[in-house]
Image 1 (spheres, one colour):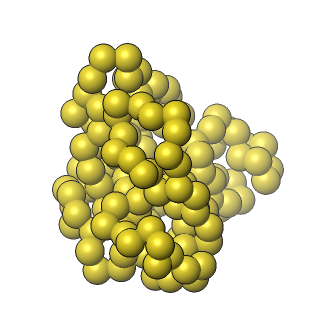
Image 2 (tube, helix red, strand yellow; image 1 turned 90 degrees about the vertical axis):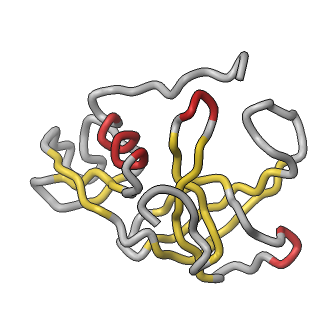
Length: 139
């Protein structure tokens, strides 16, 4: 897709994109205070430690909120585009595109799960699906 930028991989987020390509949802965990964080970053927002490892998510959660985008249209997405804010079982919140939903039937608190799908340039990214309907690698 022309005009759609490639993902920007850094030391702090490459694990996230590599895990997604293999069908896993991983988050950073501070090895000093055990706080989970997302999006990835160099330092723990709780204790400011630079030491971290990763934890694999169950990919299960509930819908905290959402929005439906109609404009401006970008060739990398299908419209209308649902974007979800999910409360994951691990205690983190996660934002991702939605797939497989009747956008008029969404309810706060509905059970969802994270699956994966291909995005621009063949990159695999997490997507939010109704519970039990996740698609993609690692399903």
